[in-house]
Image 1 (cartoon, helix red, strand yellow):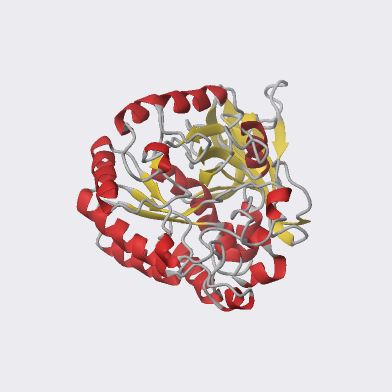
Image 2 (tube, rainbow, N blue to C red):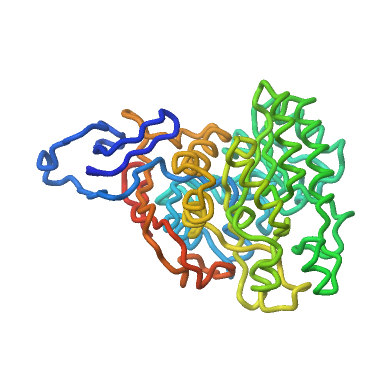
Length: 423
């Protein structure tokens, strides 16, 4: 494959130039000007004029609902959604039904994605059945291929269990990802404890639910030497806690992710859109949104993750209290980043690419997130200025608050291991 005349951008090296990329025998053979396009008649030619050629995006936080809830999403439809969004690597959470808490469950899902067009990884749970009481066999699950551990969707309230998990993960050299919401501070999930909740006659989810657990887990990580990801940051105080922790973190243990919906929307979206804007942790205030953007800008938050969370239309049409929290995000992530971060003047294009590729790949130690000669050809090609309206999805679900919105930035090619990916 030969990619001609694209703006090649690589956060790892700082490369930013109009040039060509030659892929041969499963590797990036050459990045240079004027590569002869007539050299091999069998070679696929992509004219990337006017487009950005960058490392394939890496999502460290997605749900494909398979097994157990395949009416919402399955491995095949989730993969299609990822490809449409420019993702060449996706890390799936362990809150399937049943949970990925044993080598039997993990091996089953790994086998079913061996022939995927992109790289699909399966996290294991931290605790058995994600109940927060006893640890899984972390060593066996590491050996079986789990890239990390998370009880995402459920907080682990028992501090002793968290400490034991962190000590074990540190010994094994494995990362942990934490859903930080203490239910003691939540009256109704999915809506911020603020003005909109009051209009609904609700108390909502107080920011202290997140802040209290983040304080605990940062302290434990620095104490035990565990590498952790604070998932889907939603509150300005959380951003500051992470910022201060990183100043005293020479080993790079503390990491954090922000979702496109948390840097794009506020609690007002719940009032304007309804259940499709219901998410855990909730959308909060404009002050919180801007604090998250500042965290992305200054390196406090080092990853953008979608938290792609499909639900059926029937579920989302229930009353607000009965409807599940979550929204899909793989297919709109780039455009939301371009629209609300880059074109809005908050982030450089290179920084956005870093947050969507190099940063997430580094957290898990994946051989991804870079464009270099001799490297793996996981590549995303997109038009940074193309406008499009969100109408339909490759996901099995359509629970998105962005339907009908005009966004800027469109993926044209997703190339994984040197092959154009599509299902």
